[in-house]
Image (cartoon, rainbow, N blue to C red):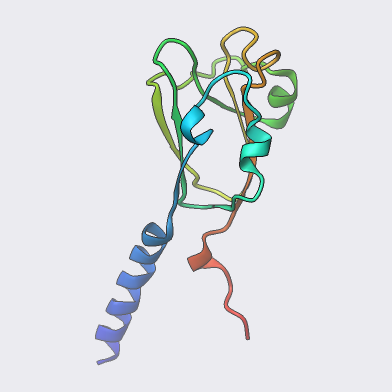
Length: 131
């Protein structure tokens, strides 16, 4: 009996995070483009481990790079980093913490404000329960 209860709990622990995960289209209807305030877009949204960011843009016009804080501030791609370029890029938020994203097409980040910074919280399913 105890082993069947453990099995059910294990299945629930596996399924709950994926059920609770949300998908965010970055920029909503505007998508990933220049001259849009992505920090304003992110205000009020809660991002958790397991959620997905979807970057939609015309293929060949923009790209998406996950960068560190220094590269974000400077709007530069770290050496050897390959951007996502499909025009429908999906990034699953795998770990908690601060995440930075830019477009590395010249002047899109610097002049066009095509950059996003978010804070990813632990999955609600993995958060400690109150006593």
